[in-house]
Length: 76
Length: 236
Image 1 (cartoon, rainbow over the protein chains, first blue to last red):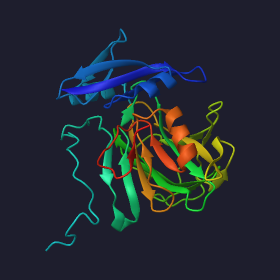
Image 2 (image 1 turned 120 degrees about the vertical axis):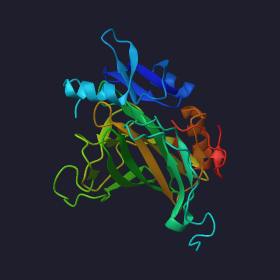
Image 3 (image 1 turned 180 degrees about the vertical axis):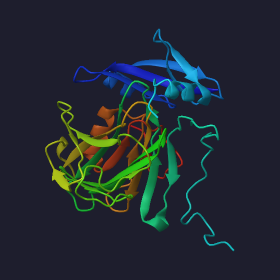
Image 4 (image 1 turned 90 degrees about the vertical axis):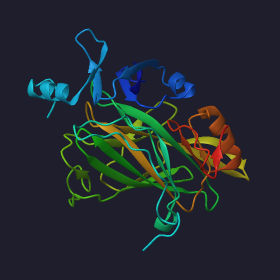
């Protein structure tokens, strides 16, 4: 299992931000940047995560990534 | 034959990053990689790897503090390393001297000083990570360029005459990933000279400012959890 900490918010310039990391940020950092924290646990055989068509988080295996690259949904 | 019989050059053991033959990688956590005194570094720290599936993203990972006393000039290298989905390394040598931030682009591979991306190692990243300095009062930022530079426009005074009669300044530093799914971490290599006092993510910005105002130069790693095996780990 791979745990992802996902942080979303709006930066000082009004631009939406999204940060994914494997280590939980501190309360001070979250508060300072006005972020929302979300935790997503992906299977150990996955290689990365993304959002599905409904905006929910999902994990991808390498085969999933290759399929998305071949479909032009992700860069090569 | 043992070439290095102790922890003289070699750092500490890391855990595997779970990179597999099928591609992909874990989101590697922060790490204290040891002093590497034989290589001239006082300490080396690695931030957590960050990315965004939607586009580039930024990490407000470091604040450095410096006072006007001799020996209080924080001197360090920052390498931004892409680990996924294509590798790249970009490095700057930096120093905060009182309120002036000095930066020089380092050569990691590409030998062209006249084009954007000069000196970078780029093995297929379609865009490279950037290092920024940020002004605390209004978050105005400057992308560090390939041209050597020095500026006091983006630093902030945290104490006036508060450290043995000298003022103390700080400089916020952020890195920005190149594009969607670019996994990027910062490797910060601190040189002897300056200071080895370090605050971690369990210290608040306000408390670090107050402590540095009274005690002088320091580093604040805002995304690295406290590493108690480091000799000067501070919690304020």
